[in-house]
Image 1 (cartoon, rainbow, N blue to C red):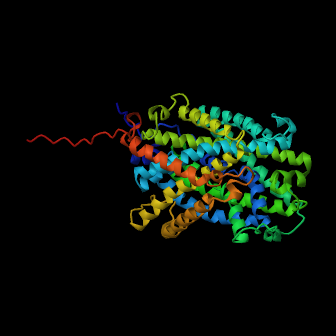
Image 2 (tube, rainbow, N blue to C red; image 1 turned 135 degrees about the vertical axis):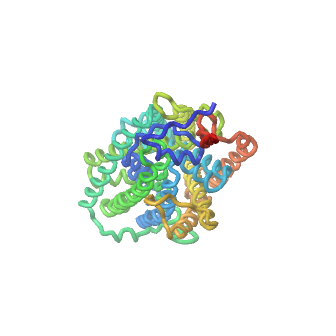
Image 3 (cartoon, rainbow, N blue to C red; image 1 turned 90 degrees about the vertical axis):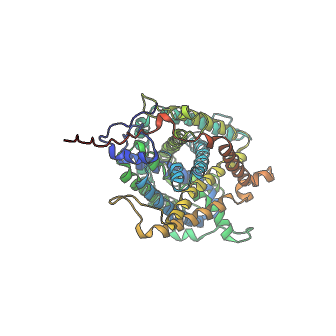
Length: 520
């Protein structure tokens, strides 16, 4: 039996957007403005991304790789502006999935949601592996497997540490959004303070000027396009960081006044990440004692922090990085749960009625939290003896996120060109006359960076022996299999079942006509 819509009350206006999708409100609205901002910025996670990928960017493009940070920001900011406009209009769970479905069609929406879901599960595992980059730098006691010199010591230990983090994020998410929000907010506050402190401490130790970002370290040698080829490879280090800002909108059904707060949270998250992350990267290059040697392209920012700040302050900062990694993994897991819930609510996943079930005690989908955690643990196992394959899988995850974003900005552009796009009402965020230009930039950027991400370069997909063609072409092959195979399953099986499940469907009461007065 279809349940009736709840009576309008405090959140009546917040729930009105759900009615357009035919959903009844089920999740508990407890998140305020800072909570939604924290969700977006913790997914991007300045300290996680920059500390995890600096070594790759520097090793591939030298100090001049820094310019990829503002380049990626400009492109992703255009995407974020489009998403902010959508968040003002449709602040619903599983934002990318529901937006793509609304702007395009159910088939495109399913594909965007499917790729985003798989990418999110992979991202949980990838973020969790960042523990290995930090904890053994703090103390060798965290190298539980061997002494770090064995062939598989580092890779296996990384899985052990990552598994602990995935178990933590699973338990926290299973116990409700309020606990998640408290931990996430505290972690983000620490991360923001630590980022500012790190910027100040690096600034007082600078040894060279900002012209350092013009040095390439000869990395263009061997590339057919010279330094441009090296820079495009190095730019992946920034592209792998600046995404996930849509999480603020994906928590829209658990937020207060989401149509106003979510757009602000999306834009504030990406702007804060750009400013703080850019300063950390710049000042790290300006303050490190030497730009020579292998440490910068192997140990990355962890080495810089210990080199510049010394062991005591440096390790204190690495503990803050550890907190940032923790809340980043928590935010990615949270977003994945909301996406799975949104797709299952439409009966668009296997065992949808189970996955879409909301715990009456915690008012959150518990089963997706556990299932996603188990799948992330399964993906981690690949890293034990095949870290190169895991690198390919991680890159595929990022590519699918960019493709999912294209699955929103592309149909949005078509809707604008056909005059079918209606922004939110007065007083809510809108791009106005700039909407078309920004949307074009978002689509062109998304297509260009997706091509750059998926290009089968050995430097990205098979950087060390053993060399195999399937590793080099792994991204192309895996994306084709995941997207093609997934959509084939949807087309032949799942689409015949799709439709809002009865227990989640909004029951619209029949209109009652005024009684006709009796004739005299």
